[in-house]
Length: 430
Image (tube, rainbow, N blue to C red):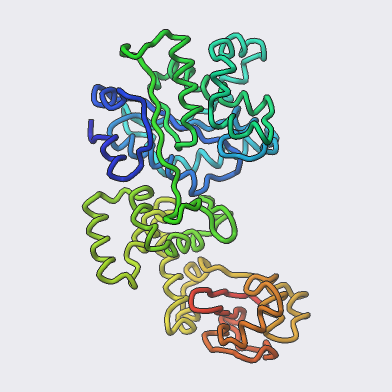
């Protein structure tokens, strides 16, 4: 093997739990493992990235990764960590989502790497052939209701209600593991710590159907990674506008980079370990440099550049960094006027409609209702911000709420509005 997968996860803080004997199995031979991704949206988001990085490290250690896109399980929805049942998606929507997700997975894994090349499979391919009675005979008889009721994903929903559809989800996921065990020699399923119950359902089905015991050489294994949280214990992965997506049409590369750049100092060491391929020595060296000059935000920049490059490509990342630097430069106006179009278009640009613009009598109107409350949520908040010297137009402070909006336009079309030191908005107003 090229590296010790378990040790890599340990120092990165990415190991939560595993079935005993897994380390011996991985040391013995190239092993095949999978992680499932349900296509409940047209794109993966950064909450999925920790699981993707598990597969990446697994492949780098010389093993074979499989990504399962859940065309079948996505029709039901995993109840794990959910307070209520998901809305059902149409089959057409699920198929479209599957295509988008597969393209994103291909950015992280090597599909032409010889024996341990990555694969993508879809569980709809085997579930579409099952009748209801056939599935009950094939899978349902091997698990007791008591066993299924003991899982946290079920117990946590008993008070609010759990449909039979969602109750059956763990049986479907468990059968996925069995099917891949039989057809592709998959010996390991991995996932977030909230998936332990579903994953071990699979190992139990395999044990009962195949008669594998603890002393057998053909056992199936489970491994989970901790859910990524912030230093204060809150959930990681959302911005002010919601999920941070890997699809540039849902989260622009600029917004994506800024999300990582704005990571708190207390969070960034863990995120570097989980979401990048930097070595332990490299991360510790960067941490030392960061401690000497935290205002330079070296860790955040390294994190943002690494993840943005992997998701959006090196050229886009370079343009985003250049655009990001321009907005906060002292000579931002001159640089915005001179910037190449490809760089300028990476910036977040918000269109003010002609109708909205015509109704704006002053700056207060423009930065509240005129831009659909993007900058300030109300006229009152806008007036307060202006009078508090927080608002700038083209890098010049404006403290008159009644100021006319006939400011000189950048590139004959744009205004740069600043709200405090950290927030800048480019409004297209003609």
